[in-house]
Length: 230
Image (cartoon, rainbow, N blue to C red; front, side, top):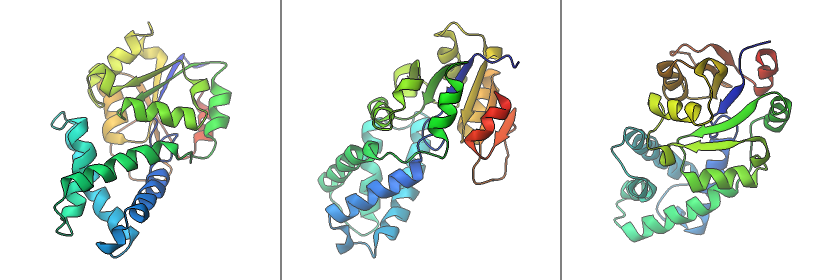
């Protein structure tokens, strides 16, 4: 029997298929706002958006950007690529994307199966950098609320992963010991580095078999492999 009692899951790109859901939401936004008038097609729009979104999220995680700025700026910069200078238009697109995105329900394979398997034996939590209201919507719409005792968000705690204090908060608030805890996430520089810095064991979820540059206690390519660990 392993020593773990408390299991912390990242949400986006670990349970909730962020890339597939985001693509579907952005395609709807593209069509609703008739952005084909400016972009060659939805693929070009998505490519430019993702470029700016990834860079701004990096700034947000480092504390250099507020949530409000991030939400509109990523679309503002995307439109700027086509010489469109309209902040109000960008804000409206951003609001619609935020409305649509949490309604998407594509999960990674075996999500419900593995959570059903784990729930009787472990205390399960979400530990996410995602925005509080959005993450709760995703959990509800995907019928994932039933599995988790707590949802810890960086927005509420005041520290973003990989800062060790968000892990410390999540562990101490449930009166756990770090050697009883396991972090499961997809992002090596955020989930795994953060767990390592706090001294918590981790599982890298790596479905695309990307090169591993940060050491983790375990590495899996399929959520069902957790049955071999836990």
